[in-house]
Length: 115
Length: 112
Image (cartoon, rainbow over all chains, first blue to last red; front, side):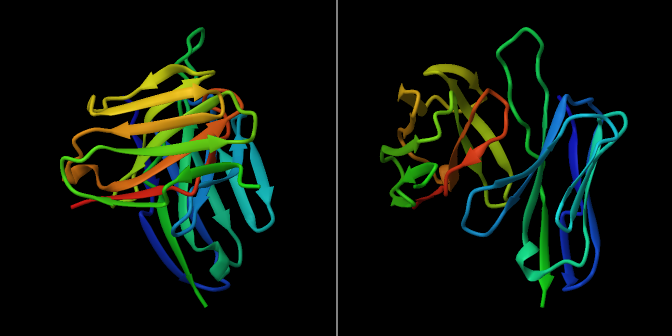
């Protein structure tokens, strides 16, 4: 069973600050997805990273996939109240030749950006 | 148009009752899922169907029975509800199994 950890579990910052959240595991993944969930809503996909060392940017959000594809980070620059939400990482362990494709979600980082 | 819809949004019921949650997606996706999110926000997969065929069945009590009448619908029936079943249940879909997931708005189930 893979161990998947997201840190920090909670983060409360002021508007304009920068932050980084992490997703770590002992397993190697074929790809990894990041989602944001706002209160009372379902998670929404932000990005998928596939290649080791890959960096993707989405406005003020920068996602990185570790070289060994065991970890990922999400950096937010100049956070805004609209960034508030639960950030979930979901690595994908594709079993080759089989049909057992599933995502395993981390426990998430609950981010609060105060105005 | 809503891509993934669930009904009802809220469900309050007594222990021992049987209830169903319905999910529909209009994205033309082949794969649909049911997830359970507990009070600590941990999102855990329960079931997945690919083209109406069950492909993932996690360790879930057999009181939970999913049904997929067609590719666009995945319903969840729960028998003999227990207090521990209280949670938010999310339906999701993806183009391929394990791909980018589109979630519904969730059904908040409260068992009294």
